Image 1 (cartoon, rainbow, N blue to C red):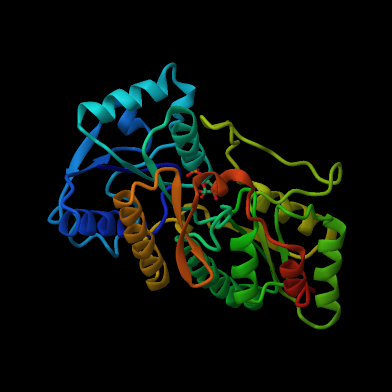
Image 2 (image 1 turned 90 degrees about the vertical axis):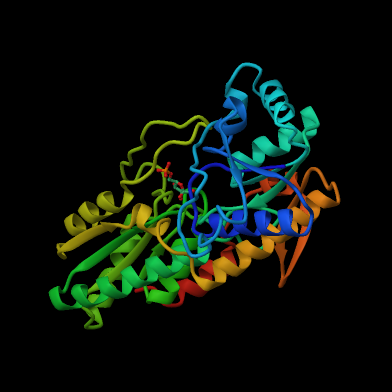
Length: 341
Ligand code: F6P
C-alpha cells in the first residue's frame, strides 16, 4: 500500500505515517511505500519504501518525512490515469491520503470518478475541514500563537503600544479565535466576519479611556474589511487557485496608528505556527487517525476518511471533508467578543 501527504505541512503528519507503518506492517503484513511531495509522488512515481526502522523516532518531529507540495493531479493532462498506472506498477492496492481541502478534494474525486482505492486522513492547522470535529496540527498552532501573544503582551504593556498579531487561517478564524481567547486579546478578527476598522479603533480607544494604554489585536490572515472601507492586497495563486495571503497585519498597523494616533506594531507569526514539534494532543490525535486509516484499508473502506467525532474516531465519507468548510460559528465568536475593548 501507499501513503502520501499533500498541501501545507502540519505538526503530527509524521505521527500518522508512523502509526500507518507500524500497524500496517506489524499487524497486517503490508509492504508500504511513501509517496514524495503529495500528489507529485504517484504522478511521477516518486516514492521510498517505508519500514518500521525508517519511521523510528519520527513521532515528535514536525514537518513530514515524505515532503509535501500543493500539486493538483487534475491540473495535469491524464493525471488520474497516470496515478492508476503508477500504483499498478508498484502493486499498490490501497492509498492513504493525508491532507486538507485540496488534497482530500482530489482524493474524493479520484475515488468517486476513477474508482481508486483511497482512504483519507484529515489534516490542517486551520481546523476548517468538514466531517471531523478537529484536525491535528491545530492544537500546536494555537499553542505557538498563544505563546507569542503572551510575549507580545509584556512588550506592548511596557511601551503602551497596540500590537497586531497576524495568525494563519485562510477561510476560518479558528486559530485567531482560540489563541486570542487563550491570550486575552482585546480584538479578534476572523474571515467569517468582515470587520469595520472604525469599530476596531473604537474598541482600542475605549480601552485607553479605561486606563489600559496597550492593546492586543489578533487577526487571521484571511480576515477582510467590510467592502470599500480599507484597501487589501492579495498575492499569486497556487495550483488549486488559492491566493497567497499575508499582509492584513501590516495594513491594520498603519490604519490603527493613523486613525488613533497610538503607536502600533504588527507581528506576522506565519509558518512558525506550522513548524516544530507537535503537542501531545496532536501526537495522540494523529496516531489514532493513522491507526483508524490502516484499519479502514484492511476493511477495504475505499472513499472513507478517519475522523474525530466527539471523543471517538469514526469513518465518514471522504466527500464530507470537502463538502462544506467548518467555520467559526457566530455563537463562539460572541464568547470572544465579551472580552473586546
Ligand atoms: O495549510 C494551511 C495554511 O497554513 C494556511 O493557513 C495558509 O494560508 C497556507 O497554508 C500557507 O501556505 P504556504 O505554506 O503555501 O505559504
